Length: 133
Image (cartoon, rainbow, N blue to C red; front, side, top):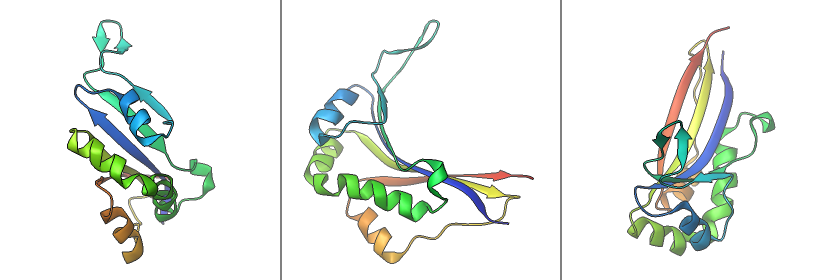
């Protein structure tokens, strides 16, 4: 019984400012993005902009720490730009997905990784799902 799959992404949202602005400030193309007002379905539109940079694909293993460090490596040199986005009111989150087999298992992050994460103006959100076999 253990972790069966992990994913990690950097997610940046804003209620009025654009995802395109995030790309311009960071100089990094997102994995996916959308703008406030973009259609979702018939008659429904997005209420905020969203910019997402995903980590390595799930078939690269289940090491959440490695996935987060990969993403940190992509944005570490942009601390000033991230602080600028934060001061403009962008909500920034490391989104972590963890799937546990039969509700058992867990993840650990080293002190070094926690220091790396703490140096950036980005919160951490872990969604944990129990799967049964």
